[in-house]
Length: 420
Image (cartoon, rainbow, N blue to C red; front, side):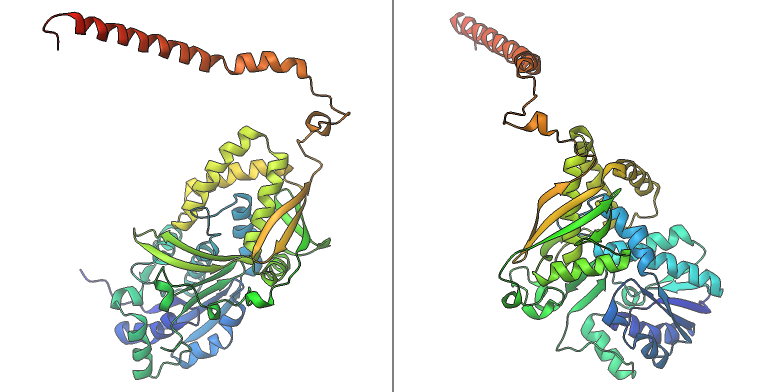
């Protein structure tokens, strides 16, 4: 039995090519009214004029929800606490924004009495998984439309469709890049970037400037944390949104955060991705450095596995699942002592921690020093080493005995006439 066409669709609207043509396509295919919903997660220039374009392109209504602070406090800070890097490289900027946008989309559709939601994701990208899984989890009663996935158009087809149907867009065939931006970073794909052997052109970068403009001297910058959350930069306390923006500015000025990565998508294909995440890369470096000072070895080792699983789950669209919630609960329990100050050195595209201090430091100067203040009980080392190496000695002795016995049996077999 065919489902009835939706009456009212709330579209996750970015102002870009895919969602701009989706307004007209939904109206033509289903005869539905469309409300365009833009969720501000710090994309700044991308939203300029977007709502007006949505109305001119046929949306019944265009709404904007300012979710920047929610994005930082409910999504970025938990990811930072988990040192979240997908495949050890990507700070999950786009992946972290999708569950918040999906949640806002579902809440708005329910509030407006809409019977469907829509997004502009393709059939082979990660975002379709993130949106669909989140929406099915949070609002299973809503129909999910994915116009680009359903009609299987490429960017050139969409640009031609927009021209033929009088849809106002900003994308052109001369500028084929697809850019997604939020407070945690920019992702850039398309055009020549699809060739993993082609160096990315300088024109794709916006937050990190041109290498010729990077300062010729390093800058040292202090970042202060309270229970795993950054609260001050350069000695100045800042709110969550302003702090991330300040780190983007300070680290981006030095070219920090350019990422060129061949990654494995959720649907099983590899793709070449380019990112700019200056603030995220710098803050992750600082947070990891502080954890090494205040967390015991066993906890650090176990948490590293939790951190990797957390990053994979977020990338794969599992934010609203019970495992992600459980992992976050564990991570939260480790952060009560992650309080202190880290000094970062920013220089020519790189960032590294060069200093860290904390009232919860587990580094004891009296035990670590080789100077006259040394209080380490050296006489205990011999007994410790004896016990520490005992399992290896036993295993080696047993292995040598077994090898010798196998050798004797082999010799005896060779001495028996006709033995194989």
